[in-house]
Structure formats: C-alpha cells, structure tokens
Length: 278
Image 1: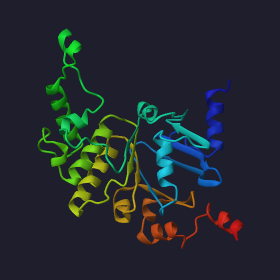
Image 2: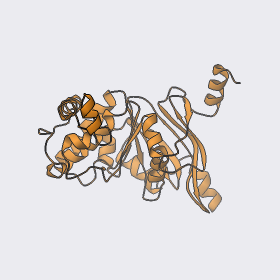
Image 3: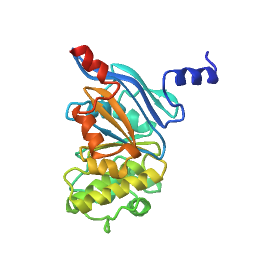
C-alpha cells in the first residue's frame, strides 16, 4: 500500500492540486466515434467561483453531467478533497457533497417555498403517533427555511407562497439557496442568470457571491459574459471538447473570453489538435 506522502507525490506529478475542493484530471467522454470531451483537467477551490464557458457543443453540459453523477466518464479521474470519487448516480454525487442546479430548477410550482426547500428532506414531527402517521413538522421546516434564506441573503418575503407566484429571479434564488443549504462542498450552476431581467440577474449574482463566502466551491456555466466577469475568480474555456485556456480574474475581458470561445485566439491545449487536423 502506498504511503500518504507517496500518494500525494503521485497526484502532484499528474498535475492535480491536492488542496483543491474538486479536481478533475484527464476526463474524456466518448459516444462511439464522437469525442464530447477529451482529457479535460480543471480544479476549483473552496470559496472560489470557477466559470466554465464555451460555444454550443464545447462540452460544458457533458462535463456538468459527469460531475453531477448523471453520466459516467469514459476515462479520467475526479477527486473531492483529494480523494478519488466515482458517482454511479446523481444521488451518490449529492451524498458526497456535490449539488447541481439545472436550468429547469426542479421546483414544484404548485407547492410553497418551504415544501420546495425541503423536497425529499421533510422533517417528521416528534412523537410516536406523528411518526406512524407521517405528520410533518411544518413549523420547524418553515423556521429553518426562513433562517437559511436570510443567511444567504435571499429575498423571498413570504415562504408560504406557491412557487409559481414567485418572480423568475426569486425561483432561481430559491433553487440555488436550497442547493447551497444542503451541501458544504461543491455547487454546480447551469446558466443561472439566463432569461432573467437585469435586476434579477444582479440578485442571483449576489447570491452566488454569498454562497462563495460560505466556503463552497462553485462552478458557474454561462453564456452571459458580463455575468461571468462579474462573479468568477477564474474561468476555464472549453473548445472542441478540450480546455482551450484558463483565465485568471485579471485576464477576464470580453475580448479574451470571446476570442478563446470562437477560436480567434487559440489556447495551448487546442492548437496541437487543430494542427493535426490540417
């Protein structure tokens, strides 16, 4: 058996940061002859927002689904707090501490804010009869929901409202706050500001900053370059299923982002692939 120090040396030799909250190394996904992802490596630290951008078909959604446990990778390795993890199901990813908010939000429109916040995690009231019958502790769930929304600065004044009565920004904020409340490790966000007005976008971005302040690692997928520049600490650009480049906050300009996304600028990892295809 390898010692801890030897294992750490091996991980570092392979280009992974053992201190990263989530590290991805050499992830590939093949569908027959189609390579949706090819040797993708990235990492995100606790209390950091990592942007993931790219044109349609660049591989963003495929990578998100792999991290969320929805599909398995063909090759590669995922580490969570330095430990190798594999997810057979989305439930396994959730149990490990990776929460995902997809574009559809997975909210029950006819149910109220509290019911959505505790969906699948309902608290049974105390007492033998309550446990037998399955009565819910509505008071405790309402108070807990109110506390968590306040902690994350989510402005939903009435938690007894049906979710369908909330604004688009409030629904998005509820989905993000719910995911953040039930994980302490990684939050994956798929286009959280799309189809929102300017004010609602600003509210969601502020919520993402608050989630970061809680020490949660956030991966933020978006086509909205202004939002990416506003909230991300670093950005990984995917092109042709590969990492084209990684940009630090000081390099986050529209010119850089759009240049790498469109191929006007060629990242070091994509250039050899293009040259081999010529």
